[in-house]
Length: 242
Image (cartoon, rainbow, N blue to C red; front, side, top):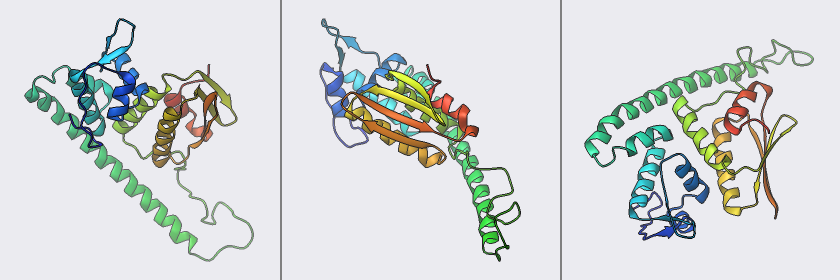
């Protein structure tokens, strides 16, 4: 079974750490997939998760669905009929069509935003008024503030939210900080890399987020800050503080 990394994976009753290492899918994500009912695992007499070739095929199927931006609920529905390719294709076609519609809508929104920025740029080229900035000087947009605009489509936002939930499944503490939320995990370098990657992807589509990541021998800490207008999005993605 070939994964996106190009590595070939053959297993025969391996443990979760081995499957994570060979597939490139973090163990935290594998545990989340099990909790979500996508990747059930057998248990050894000692209680360790064990995976075989059928689980590898399921994981490849999940990874393929994620690459299309499908929410886990839709991937779970497709997994239920994955023994019939014709049925999967029949169900997948409208999902992909919806993704195309989302992408087209997103492109239209970005085009409108670019046009708005172009108008601001034109105003900035005009002669500057005397004195300080004012409401009509052109330095600030006079239309609705795009400062908390997210460039992801609804489907992409759902998929990104599921990615965060996979990582947040092992959070040990949430606490408020000025302008945001502090998330704490047990120290883990692999987890830190995954949190950093996802935070970078999040900031790429929602530039108003401010992330600060700190790893020490006892804890991994992520500070998330955002404008007050994005408070609901912070709660939606990262949960409310305990």
